[in-house]
Length: 98
Image 1 (cartoon, rainbow, N blue to C red):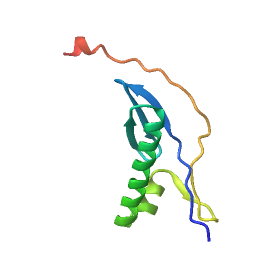
Image 2 (cartoon, helix red, strand yellow):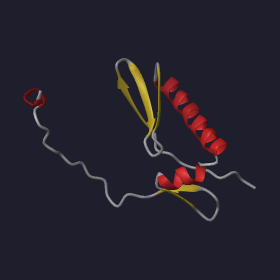
Image 3 (cartoon, one colour):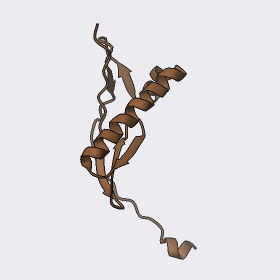
């Protein structure tokens, strides 16, 4: 029997000389010196997150709350967006508000 799988979107960007990696669907992040190090670090952080949820007995609940559902084969899939859009909002001038 195969172990259930989950596919997570990951994003990497540079911030203050570090490469930041995030898995936004489960709100897990880490960093590294370069992209390879950041990928390794994020993979480890995700694995630790999964292990922690399993130890607490909350993995299914947390995945469900994060928008995942379990398919018939046991794999977990994230809800699919109907569309992706970028919206622009006006922000007050923080200097005036101080």
